[in-house]
Length: 483
Image (cartoon, helix red, strand yellow):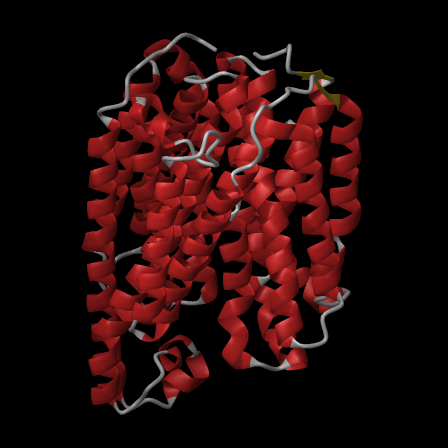
């Protein structure tokens, strides 16, 4: 615990960080159920995906930058600036009158959200010992689990009662309370730094990630944007060249020589695809192949989040007793078992079997995420903990984001020929009960069969990613002190 650098009322700090985490975690799910109503008022259905993508791009690309700033300037000012940007974007999003405005304001929200999670976990690393931190981080895993389960329902409730704009406005008082609590309770000793921020590296990384994701997210029609991909790769190559030259890089590449940092980051690239892929592509099987309802889809996804929370709460004793590597391997093995079972999904697969196998995968994600994050944090001191925490968060998120985009392109490419043969260009007809009833029986069977085939390919790729993550986790050392 770095008391020389950070101190204060830990209970108040915990409340403030939990509240901020809840707001930013909920924001990624609560908007989904409000979007049909928003489109009905603002129009612009062709821009639908960008309401989510703008937030995702901004929040993902800026994580390493915030991690470096937290090490240079301290945790508190960066956290307060981030939550301020998030609240500004929230207020503006609530006032949006057109879809382009809403997309722009969601990007501002994302710029703020990119600071919250890495800085929160960095603050926890400063204030709590390894044993305490393992326990406290279980609370934050529960917050993420609760947001993924309750976010869509809360969004629907707010939209149907006080209006969709309050999905954004309601963030303001709670976010302000979190900022004030942390401002009053967290005390930091200013750490002087000799070198200025690596502006060129930060710009190259942010632009490279944004353009690369744009090229892949453009693949939702089954194709990618080769020009954007080429530019994105070139910018990331320029970023690496810059980081090797500057005295204070935004992402010190030398850190990745340490297996306590390299293994969590590399594992996160693969496990992140599973983390994002399960809630994205299992509901599609339930509704599109088995012709279930949205409620049925929700029943099978909830255990994934619940299992994650249970493992996060139960992992502290295992981490202290066994060390990092055994718990990471346990988590990876459970994720592998859960994703491999998805290959057995058929038309007649009962929901209870899906519930069980996704709960197993969720348990694995909880054990894996806790052990990998704590291993990386425990490997460095205060002056590097911000950038290391951000690196683990960034690689997991970017792995998931790139993975989802690639999986979406694969699925759409597999569906394209079946849709042409069925005489329709819209697979959404399969997901809408009223439109589904109007499809000829032959066309309906063909589309279901093609969707099932495409999803099984997706599940195979997820299983491969899980197996790769497990293999890399085996190289994680077990202990380095007790922090």
